[in-house]
Amino acid sequence: MRYTRGAALTSLALLAHASAPALAQGPDFRFSGFGTVGVVQVDQPGIEFRQTGQTSGAGESLSFKPDSRLGVQLDGSFNPTFSATLQVLAKHSGEGDDQPRVEWAFAKAKLGHGFTLRAGRIGAPFFAVSDFREVGYANTWLRTPSDVYGQIFLRTFDGADLLYAGDVAGVPVTAQLIAGNTTAAFTRTDIDFKNQVGVNLTAEVADGVTLRLGQINGKLTVQSATMRQLAAVLRTTPFGSVGDQIECTDRKASFGGVGVSVERGNWVGSAEYTERKTACYVPDTSGWHVMAGYRFGAFTPYAVVSELRLTNSNVVNNIPRNVNATLTTLALTVDGLLDGVATRQATQAVGVRWDAYRNIAVKAQYERVDTKGGYGLFGNVGGPRPTDPVQVLSLAVDFIF
Image (cartoon, rainbow, N blue to C red):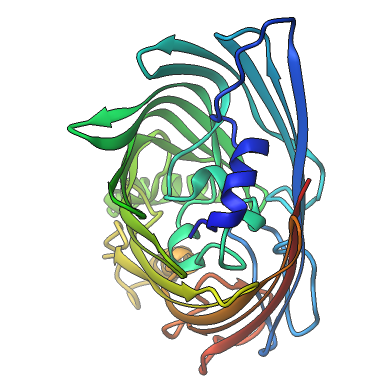
């Protein structure tokens, strides 16, 4: 959920699609940045809270890894038509390090009549707050709900998009068509999402009420030698169809969602529903969240409920057990693979945002996560499956400059 008072400043300083000023003389450059210093702790041993794709996170000891980040951005306007944006972000990554990486790097051309063309590395519009999900200050909550945003860890694509902003039948509308490719590391495994084609639409249907819907289709490849070896071995048996179902090389995949955000007086709220679908062992999932908050001066308490569901495992493991040792081993190996990606959980969260100083917000959030008999989105570091809901406590300081 975007935060109104922070959003006005953030959009001017950070968001790449903000309009560049018409220049009478030479290029104009603007430098800005954002960051979060956050700590997280869970109450059960053997598991870690992680942002999706990260290699490690927070256990029973406090950790800065999941939420802490620092981003800097340079926007250049060369004339009334052409501009460019470069954003570099440092956070704990799927490569297991905290090295700065280029998050955005694109050129932009205004085409007139409300149309804009961008090319380069661009933020991918998978979610309602995709453009500013890393800018903690621009959001009421401490972090985006994992049950929804944890389905897709990709944040950018390399390619081009066409933007439109204008009124349609008196309704302010923005539209985005995208085409491109993404490669990123998920816990040290490269994931390719190629041949992406998608659309993202938003409309302000009433004062303070915005609807959003989006859909992106592409081809998914998981660069896992273990997965490919297992599929190859299965194809040498009478159960080759199981290997075909597991194989995740150049397979169809899609992600879509619909959402609404509300900002009326002191009330803020949002709701979002999303679906992930693939044609391989990565399961189909759906996620939803509902958030509501109320501003009391500098303080905004809020509550979030959300859920991540597994809708289809995409693999029918019909390999018999107890026939011979080889088939039993293969059956159990397939079970283990599917169990490792079968993430489902439900979360209730409460938190408070305190606008302590200009451009600085302090947040605290408590979450109670039911992992539905598995590990959910928590990292398994050798502990038992949680039998009780996992309690997650987070503190963060967000800032922009």
